[in-house]
Amino acid sequence: MSSPRKRKGKVGKSVVICIGGLAGSGKSTLARKLAGKYKLDYLSGGDALKALALEKGYKSLGAGWWESREGMYFLEERERDQRFDEAVDGKLLQMARKGNVILDSWTMPWLIERAFKIWLEASAEKRGKRIAGRDRISFKDALNALKRKEKQTKAIYKKLYGFNLGEDFAPFDFILDTNNLESQEVFQIVSMVMDNVVFSS
Image 1: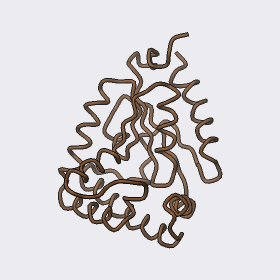
Image 2: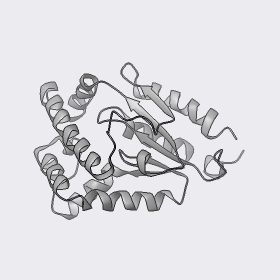
Image 3: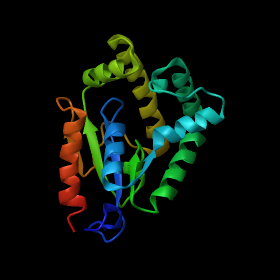
Image 4: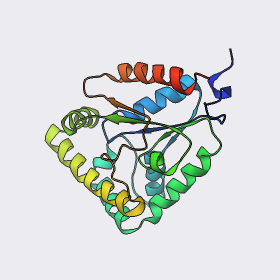
């Protein structure tokens, strides 16, 4: 049997997968697991932005940085200067054209045409609990940081690209509610979709 990397999607081109979902929905965990299973290159918009922040002198390391005071400050800087996001998205698009990639990104589902696009949905309360556990902070602090971060992030992408993050689901081929699912269950469900839809031909 040929490896997934050699398989072709239904459109006859190499596979490109986009995973979307708000913070705490499980998109990064899922994207990494799928990349490993199907031997796809993993590209993260969030990691690319953190690398850019690191170059500018931010200490953008470790889980929970985006919800930290410094992460929020960088978010404000991105609001003032759209070149950060434009540079990252341009690089992701360039790399995605090579194919056989999985994109963990908030913007790529709207910016790239030929891709299979998955959205993970979860309530703010559930996502706040996950982030509180991950970052070892109180649920209240996690929820407040989450709401502030999402308000600013949505404003950035609305101004830059015109879409409503977390509200506009038109680009997506598959939407999964993860509120009552563990990460392994999400992985198993999406793997079945990948096997039966993306790699079925």
